[in-house]
Amino acid sequence: METHPATAAMHHWIAGAATGDWSRLIDMLDPAVTFHVPVEGFAGVRHGPADAVRFFDWLTANLRADLVVHSTLTGERGVAFEVQVTGTMRGEPFTQRLCLVFELRAGRVTAFREYLAWPGGLR
Image 1 (cartoon, rainbow, N blue to C red):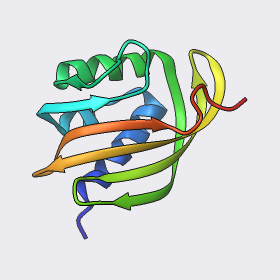
Image 2 (image 1 turned 45 degrees about the vertical axis):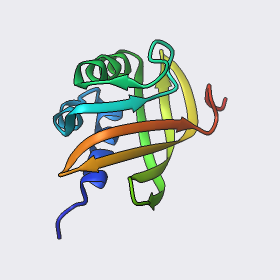
Image 3 (image 1 turned 90 degrees about the vertical axis):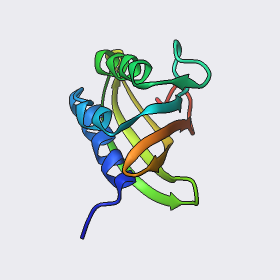
């Protein structure tokens, strides 16, 4: 059975957060990818793989975390994953919940968005 591309993207996100290696997720990005993440320095809707790589480089420098998917929601335009995150951000321990949404076309990530349930995490 073939893995849905959104599930593959989520697996690559989990691996990137744990190891700092985002290359497999980056390889899935459409040349016209857009994204929105609640991270300082990346306000608003961002465009293109180069900007996404800059974001993933920021994560590599600042984040190491284990992600556990608790729910998966599918819709006409995308797939959302509710995730528990436990790890370190800028060297400080944190835990939080977030929702990652992937939109795909022909197996490529055309858009991704991140929504935080607990901005700043829980202490």
